[in-house]
Length: 403
Image (cartoon, rainbow, N blue to C red):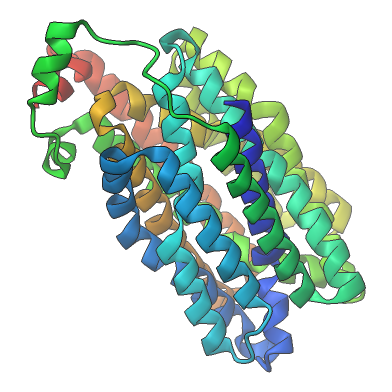
């Protein structure tokens, strides 16, 4: 788990070293300020469109050929593509390379799938919480290093550095990671009978527990990606364009710091207090906090609210992953994480497009309000769904298995 923890840290670092700064990179490619919001949405969404389509296929291949192989495939492919970012000359070339990035992705979902397979049942929430903390740690280091490199040497060289980092993570997985066996092995007779069952994607559409978590992920990723492509531009407006990349790197890293602190805590609280209860609390709290950004006009206040937002946001993904694991069979684990990746990508594709249009017509402050309302609505929907489950005579776990 710890090798994979460092692996997702490096993967996240390589991503956040370069991708959050693409809106500013668009200026170097000749995009004017009036249309940069829309172009930022298109650039971000292009990768997620391909990722949403490909993630279920990579998940199926992970179950068939091994999750470790999928981690290595994704890491080496991403290293090549990050290097290609350094050579693009037009906005449409940037969109094309982003689509290639979405096509080959899957490093983090496959890593999560390995950990979910080998983690003891009683430590599942905290284990996935630690993996999410690794992702958040990379979210700190990436913007810091990326901002420093972009200011000192130019953003193109930060793309090369990102390629080297993800390649290093892939090499570590090649030498030191083995998939191992599931921590909770089933009895021999039960295992034989399960192997005979046809585990297909059709099962997912009859698994209400899994489908509900996928919907939560779509809505959550849609909401946070409505504002993500615009943050660097907003920070430049608050603090001035001089040193904007470094300022953006520092502020964006605060979400990662909050994630390191909060993700394992939310996982442990879920184990003790109930995962659904913690999920509802995190969604509603994050939505309330992000609405506060509408009133912020100072950069330091914006940074403080971002940190608070990160504390609550950090609990959503590990809790959803844990609930997803509880509602799926181990033989379907790779495909279920492929579906969660697809849900993440689909929401991440829609978010920048919606945010770009809102930013173009209404202004960025209203994007914060819309994001908060969507998160609060998602938390309320999960709470109502949980109450309906309690009133149901058939437990969701049993219905999921029977389906």
